Image (tube, rainbow over all chains, first blue to last red; front, side):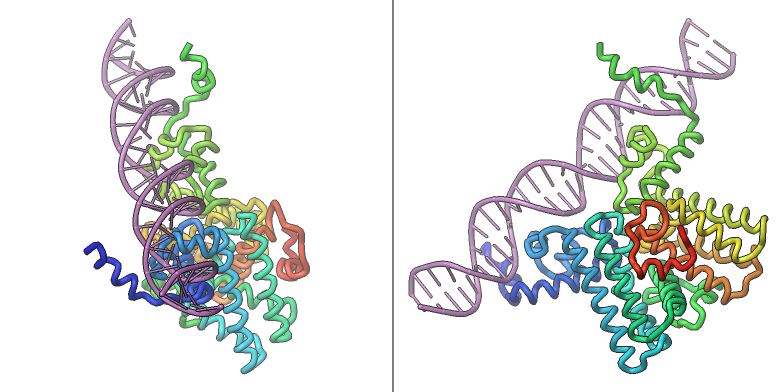
Length: 189
Length: 189
DNA sequence: CCCGGTTGTAATCGAATGATAACTAACGTC
DNA sequence: GACGTTAGTTATCATTCGATTACAACCGGG
């Protein structure tokens, strides 16, 4: 019975390439957000998505393109979240609360940070710069914030992002020390 | 003549382990600042320091320990720079100027950022958190800044750090777009 | 002068990794 | 119900990389 091992596989649902791509991007978001670009293997992504590693490559071409697609998607979602927040109240405070939410979910923000640190790669840098520039514009357009206000907003965001990467903010937090409480301010996340 | 190839090697200076360690840390700083922890090989560090790869391992034990030592050293230098600036003028403005200098040199700051993104590694995270906490304390102690002032200071710093990683600030800059000018503000670096 | 300790290298290894190739099974359609 | 197309796999490969081992050259002291 050389079959048995395959039953589980055969039972798995067959998806269209587009659907599978979505699942893979979800998995890639999780994987890259913890390991970063260089520190994550395509096999880790594949296992998370319960798919074979070569299939990941076949769909995205290269690991690099998979990472870029993941960053794009993360930025799409971040902008969407901001737009949603602005729809309720078009203020920096509202977007700030949305950012706290994103930080609590951790993955979108962290993948963006990993994008920053992978910007030395000529195929990644341009995309990351473009998306960060778009986020800046989005913030200003949605809230009408001044140049200075938007800069301060993003600065606070970047500090929280770094704290998130250090596991000081967001889920899976480390035991809190005094300096962490100071730096977190009123952001309880 | 199985000798000839070795002449170049023999001509190289012999250093004490401690001296060599310093040279290796310099090389590691450069290498890790562009590639990050996972994206840099011990061989790259070795070539930069003009030393064989196994010797790098012998001196530092593991790549992980080399990275940790590099982060420690980078943070030492950052704190030293702050102390030096505070000796001239113990104000946030003075430290801010010092930060701009560090950003222009690029490597110390970038390695710290790579430390953040490598914090998921249980051997790296604690060190990075400890050092960042120390930097916060250093800023407050040197300038007498309030909790809020220090937080804003570090927030601005983290924004600039991220911009540096994206090659928007610091050396080897990308062509400037409007949003970059906005976010850089008066930091010409 | 030689000998123990130190600095450093070459050779090599095993595991991991991204990518390719060849193959298989399911689905829709005529 | 055969057939082309699409989804997905297993097997495999060439590299790369961190680490180990064994060895070589240099140096200072007795």
